[in-house]
Amino acid sequence: MNILVTGGAGFVGSHLCEALVERGDRVVALDNFDPFYPRERKLQNVNQLRDHVRFDLVERDLNVPESLVEVLAGGSFDVVVHLAAKAGIRASMRNPSAYIETNLGGTANLLEAMTRTSCRRLVFGSSSSVYGNNPGRPSREDDRVMPVSVYAMTKKSGEELCRVYSATQDFSVLCLRFFTVYGPRQRPEMAIHKFTRLLLNNEPIPLFGDGSMRRDYTYVDDITRGITSGIDFVTQHSGFDVVNLGSGMPPVTLNELVARLGWLSKLEPNVEYCPAPGGDVDSTCADINKAGGLLGYHPRVDLSEGLGRFLEWYRALAAGGAASYGHRAKFDTATKAS
Ligand SMILES: NC(=O)c1ccc[n+]([C@@H]2O[C@H](COP(=O)([O-])OP(=O)(O)OC[C@H]3O[C@@H](n4cnc5c(N)ncnc54)[C@H](O)[C@@H]3O)[C@@H](O)[C@H]2O)c1
Image (cartoon, rainbow, N blue to C red; front, side, top):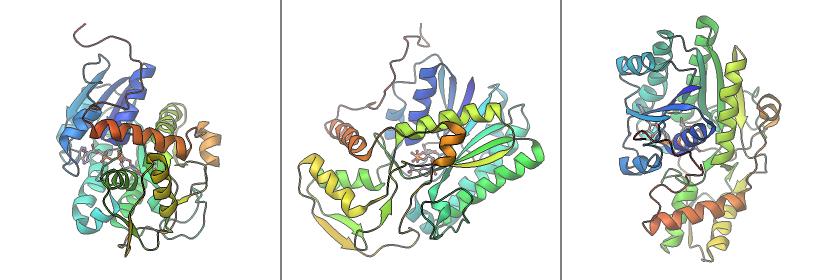
């Protein structure tokens, strides 16, 4: 298949591009190298893919509609996977209009550009944050959503835009709500990455509240398998649907997460408790029964194994030797030059 992955140079996007190229798809990754974290890191994410004959990277901005039309018109895409977004809950509270512009306006630009082509199949990267303060746990897809951050609101609004295009323009859309994704290349501001950096530098680790906040940490390879199944799903089904992708395990507190990182790295964490900023919810936990039934989604990597892999990647990165670590694929040797 020909697949466009927006946000393809990011954390989740780069893992997805590798998995798709590995299984034989032709992939175009679209990314604007948003400065939320360094461009260099994103170039490293796709470093080993860049010469592959079935991979192209195009630097384009979701907020420039004509460039989306140009990329879509030139690609004969079967499916679009929309992962490009301004990520980060706390940053969205500091700069709401930029999040609304990219996550909502950019999604509208993409959907509108798709109407100019024959591609009507979309997988949308949504978020567990849409459940917000709904106290029901584990969260089910038909639970009422109650976003408590601008970021979460943009993700829920993005889902609703997709629903509109499905109803009015005959799009097949699957919205996948990811639950805290981690693994090699995780964004530097996310908890596991940040805590590891501080722990290995013997610096204090700030934990919100009393450290009892719980998260459903989901390993990136499991998310990638879920997205890949989602791509196949939208090629075989019409209409609109929403599915959770979580770990399938009980959520883990921040205290427990830090203790596990300390145990794995054989270092004593130096924790400092601090007030929780607005926008974060106390707990996330996915009900993944629907994902199992519709997509055959069954997570394989538990937290200990996933944290071990993350630590191995991080140590190599810190030692300067992991420019493209996390490249799981044993690619065939077909490069653009050959
Ligand atoms: N990582 C998680 O835990 C998590 C959880 C829930 C949902 N998500 C969603 O999954 C997707 C991927 O997240 P990630 O963690 O890989 O983040 P990421 O920041 O690593 O990747 C997002 C990519 O989108 C690109 N981008 C941003 N604005 C753009 C624009 N205007 N035009 C083109 N590209 C643009 C960025 O440069 C970046 O490479 C996002 O949509 C995010 O909201 C992630």
